[in-house]
Every structure is written in C-alpha cells, then in structure tokens.
Amino acid sequence: MDNEMQPILHIESAIEAILFAAGYPVRYDKIAEVLGIGISETKHLIENMAETFQSETSPRGLRLLMFPDTCQLCTKEQYLPYIREALGIRRGGNLSASSMEVLAVIAYAQPVTRSYIDTVRGVDSSYAVNALLDKELIEACGRLDAPGRPMLYATTEKFLRVFGMTSLADLPQTELPKPMPESGEEPAENTAQNNLSNEEKDPPSSHDQIE
Image (cartoon, rainbow, N blue to C red; front, side, top):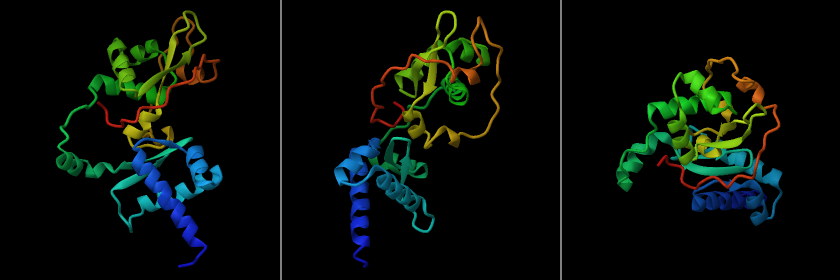
C-alpha cells in the first residue's frame, strides 16, 4: 500500500471510532483538535467517508450524517426491524398525527409563532407544541418583533437526525398554506429577517430515538 495513504486511512479509522464510541453528534473542531489536523481537512475527510458509507457497491448498515458544525454515525432505517428484534426494543415513541402536523408546519415555515401554527391547522396546537419541545424536536429561537412579542419556534438538529436528514434542504417539496398575519404579526417567511432574542442553546440530546 502507498505509504502516503496509510496516515489518511489511519485518520479515517480514528474518526469512525470516535463517532461510533460517541453515539451522538461530535463537533468537527473537536475531531480536528484530537487528530492534530485542520478543520477543513477534517470535514473533507468526513465527506469522503460519508460517500463510502452510502456507496451501493459496498453496502453498510450505518450512515454518516453531516451537519453544519457536527457529524454523527447512525443506523440505516431499513435495518430498524432487525435492530429492534436483536436488542428487544419495543415499538413505540411514534409521534401523534397532531404532533406530526405541527412539526411539518414548523419545519417548512420556520421560524413561526404558535398563533401561526394554530391558524394553519385551524385548531389549538399548544399540547402538540409542548410535546415537541419535550422531545427536543423543536425549540424556542427568539421572539417576533410584534405586539406581545410572541415566541418563535424552529426545528432542532435532533429533528434532522431523527428523520435522517443533514439539512432542511432535504425536506420533500411541498406547499404550505400561508395565513394572513394577525395583530401586526408578519408572515412566517419574513420572520427570519427580524431581530430575534436568541440565547445560547444547550447541546442537543444524545438520545436520537423519539421517546
């Protein structure tokens, strides 16, 4: 084997070992620091590894998901029945239909207020919103600059991991109803331009299953 390739393969093996042992998203800068290489080089190596994991010529039971600041190893969805059977995992933890509706509204129109969600769905969504907050699939991301300064909600990195996506660009294309703004509230597509009262968030939970 080419001697120049050995260090690269060694580093990729180390990255795989780190991600496997962690079981949760690990920051690129942390991996780079541990391995003594640059962040850009680290991300480039991980991108190549992710392609290998997805290769049809070398099928594997794992996926390597890449996010803006972190990456994570996870199992492929098609092997879930085998995992459940082998580990004795009971079925459950599925989201209710109302929670899925609320999650879809937030995912496609974020950041949004609860009144926006209620208007799109035509019913009160407070219980579903609280349930999604408890599961860490959504989070409060600031307040709308409007009377009452209502809270804005957006999906989390855990949402992407649970649904096997690397970014919101992976969402299926669809059209979401756009209700008229209420009481000075701006339409959801304009809220991203507002000055939000963002605060530092706790790191996402290491448990990727919906509990």
